[in-house]
Amino acid sequence: MSLRHRIQKYRQYRQNLYELRLCTDRNLADLGINRTDIRRIAWAACD
Image 1 (cartoon, rainbow, N blue to C red):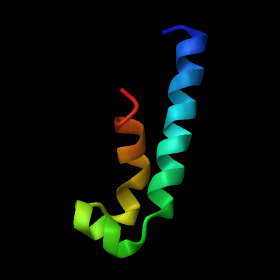
Image 2: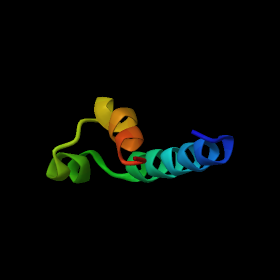
Image 3: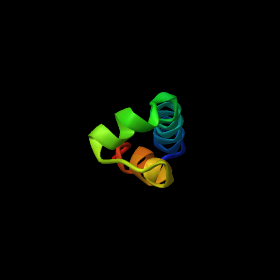
Image 4: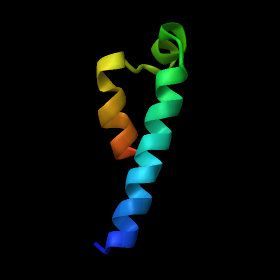
């Protein structure tokens, strides 16, 4: 994996993380997501 690709992936992760953290607990519950899972889900969405 090139450095450029890693940087793009990390930026996407940070954006996903930011957006998920803005969600209310109710919105996350509607999606079936716990706050403790946000980091894992944000990273998985980058692939």
